[in-house]
Image (cartoon, rainbow, N blue to C red):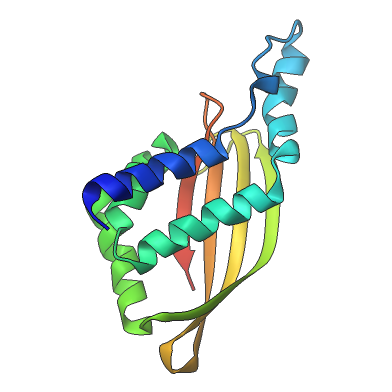
Length: 160
């Protein structure tokens, strides 16, 4: 896949994860404002999250880890620079070999008021059990954050 096609694929992924404008209406009370991200986290279709996470995992499979970082949330980009993200994931991924199969095992969504490590907001996680060449088994976690513009973007990717 060339860079133009990969960028198009990433743009399509972000469009797939975009939240419908139902949450764009301004609430009249501060309590309602705090509820908007939590409602968006609850209302996001789990199938859309799984499909988005699968696309991200497949980009990593095809060596496009840098493009995954390019489309990530600003929260993710603040926590790790591009080179460290790419080198870290590629170092974990390469010894495992080709993916022979991948099965999602859970989808969860949550809202946090914020911690020292995690800014306030709506988050979603998709977990996969992954089978690699030679019957090596692994576990992948793809995390998303609902950004301020109403788009779900990658906030983390971990291989265990």
